[in-house]
Image 1 (cartoon, helix red, strand yellow):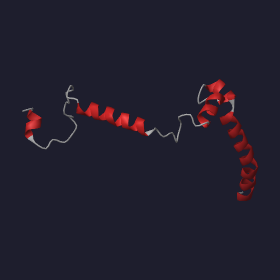
Image 2 (cartoon, helix red, strand yellow):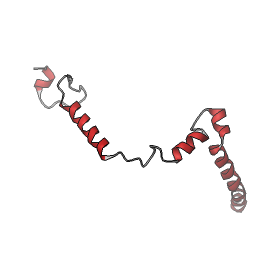
Image 3 (cartoon, helix red, strand yellow):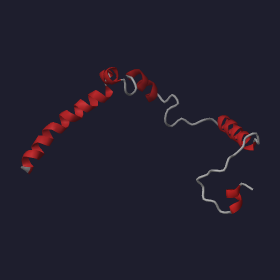
Image 4 (cartoon, one colour):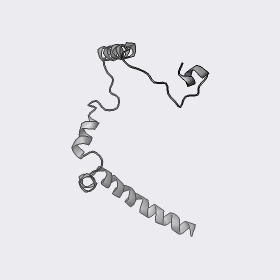
Amino acid sequence: MTRIGRRVRAAVNPVSTAAARWWCHSAVRHMLTGYGPTAKQRRFIGCGAGGAGFAPSAEQMKARAEAIDDLLGRDDHECEPDPFLPVSDASRVLGR
């Protein structure tokens, strides 16, 4: 039975792989299911327009760091203590 199963898998695997590859890269999949990027979107993603591997410039990084520093330095917000944090002293529990 092992030999038969191995032969069946050897015959089915290439066909299954080809069918899965076609399905994943076809416009039919997106048209029927509405899931995943269209072929045009995949081409756009593939050309490296802001996708994985995108590195911001030094000026952008500096601007982001300054914006974060500005946000962290503001005192116009009130921080409520997290009720789920372990309490180390009674004053936090009593609110004094």
